[in-house]
Image (cartoon, rainbow over all chains, first blue to last red; front, top):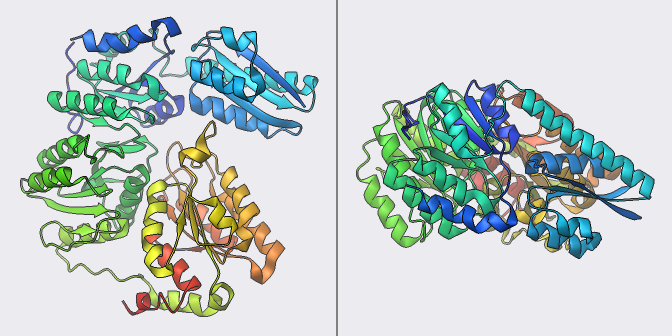
Length: 58
Length: 514
C-alpha cells in the first residue's frame, strides 16, 4: 500500500493512533489528522497467530 | 474490609484512563485499594495473588476489563464500582463523539484504509501494553509508516527487529520507551510549546529532550525536529540504528543548522559507529552524554549537562565564545548561601524527581560535590543519607500513573519523608499530557512542612522544564512554587549545584570561583 509523504521531516503528519487516548487528543488539538484504532488485545487462543502474522505479511 | 470485583466484558480502556479512574476511586474515604486492569493472563495471576481469585477472574479474557476495589463494606464497594463503570463508559462515549472519531476497524489495516481519505497515514503512534507492540509496529512499518512507540516493556530483541526494518525502509522508529518528539513543529507525547527553529535534537531521553528544547526556546531559538530514539538505542544490541538514521535526516533537512544528541554513554562499538557518522555531518553537532567525561573537541564537543549542550549549541550558532560558568548569577547564589547555609550545612539532600534523566543528571553533578549519593534507595533516605529518587521509575509506577500525570504521590512522599532533609531538590515538567497544575500539590506540601517545622524545614530548590506557552504556564507554576518558599534555578544543573553548596559549602566552594 502506497503511503505518500513517508519522510515526515518534510511532510505534514497524518497519524494512526493505537492506545492511550490522551496522546491522540494532544495530536488532534495541534490540528493533526488522527485516525484512532479501537484496539483490543487478541483473544488468548489467538495470541500466537497475532505475533506471527506481521512476519508473514510482505 | 470487603473486596469486590466487576468484570466489563469486551471493554478495553487504555492504561492512563484505567489508572486515572482507579486513583480517583482510591481517594474516596473508606476505599483502601482500587486496581483496574485488562484481563490478561499476567494480570489475572496478579489479582489472584492479592486475594481477588474468583471464577469471574478466571473466565475473563484479555479484551475484558477487571475492576477491583477493597472498601470498608460491601455497599461502599458496590457504589464506587458503579461510579467507576459510569466514569469509564462516559469517557468512551466522549471519545466516540469526538471530531477525530473512531476507526470502524479494530485493526491497523482498517484504519489505514480510512486514512486514504486523508491522503494516507505516515505515522503510527503506539501506546499499547509492551507485549503487543512488536506486532502492531512491524505491521505499520511494512506498510510504510514511521512509528512512535511510547510503550515500554518491549523486549530488546523486538526493538532490534523493528529498527532494522525501519532503517531498511528509511523510516523512523522512535522508541520503544519514547516519551517525547517534535516532528515539523508537532509535539508527540509529553511535549512542550516550543517554537520551530534551527536546532535538531536526537534524544535517548524524553525529559532530556524536553529540557533542551525548553532551554533553547528560553534563549530565543527553536526546534526543527526533536527525534526521540528510545533509551536503548546506543546499546551494543541496537547499535545506534535510529540515532544514525536521525543524524542523516537532520543533515539533509534544510531547516536544521545545528544538531544536539542527548544520550547515555554508548557501547564502545556503537560509539565508533557514531564517531564515523559524525565525520559525514557538516553541521554543528554537540553531544550531551550524561555519564561520559566531557570532551571539548572543537568539532564535536561532548558535554556533561543538558544546559551545557544548549550553551555550546548557541555559541556555535551565534559564533560566540562558549562560556559556561557554574551559575548564571553567582552573586545571587552567594547571597542565598549566606542567608540559608547555616540552616542546611551538614544535612542531607533529598531529590524527588519526575524525569529520570534529570534525576540522573542531578546524581552525576551532586556525587563529586557531596561525596556520596544513594540513587533510588528509599532506605538511604530514611537513614538520613543523600538520596535522589526517580519517581517515574517502574518501582513507583506499577499500576499507577506517572508522576508527570499525577503529582499527588510525590507531594505525599515529600510530606512523609522530606522533613529530615536539609535540601529538597526537585523538577517540575510541564507540557502536553502532563498534569494541568503540577505545582499546586507540591507547593501545598512545601507550605505544610514549613509551617510544621519552621527553621528546621528543608530548603526547596528546583527547576521547571516548560515554557510560558505551555497550558500550565511556566510563569504561573513558578509563582506558586516561589510563593511556597522554593528557590527556582534556570536549569537542573544549577539547581543541583546550589543544593550541593547549601549542604557542603566548603566542598562546593570552587563552584563559585568558576
